[in-house]
Image (spheres, rainbow, N blue to C red):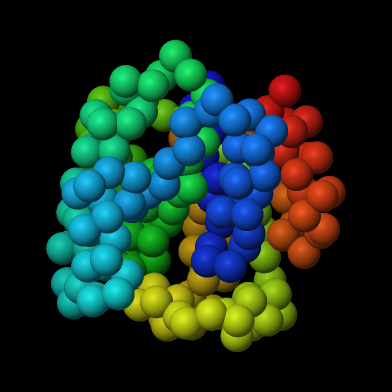
Length: 191
């Protein structure tokens, strides 16, 4: 089963992925960007050095996704795969960054990068302005987080639209619940 954890920055997806991985220790744990050697380089470039052109950012994310698919997803498809981010956030961020992009176009590009392999399930952690402010205050913001809270909340709304368009099995969970409650909801959903 290929499970992707989605949510805007500070929603707790990495924490929940780690908890689920502890429950399924044989699962493959990965992330986008950064799950491959190329992905680590692209992650540093996009999140910490910054990219000025929205098309460049889109193609860097797609390059990471294609590499990630070939190196991690395809060879491990007979196992449980837990990924921190995937095509849902990739499409949502691209749509938010440039109004001229159409969702169908971005879906086609992502399907191409993934050789038509979509996640089996998606866990989407939903946050709010207060929670984002609180959690961003505890860390150094990267280039995407510096775009602001309104931007992150817009991304969150678009993620739901993308999930609906792709018709992937997904669950939305309130990220302000306790870690334990969220973890239980995710385990119930995965079962």
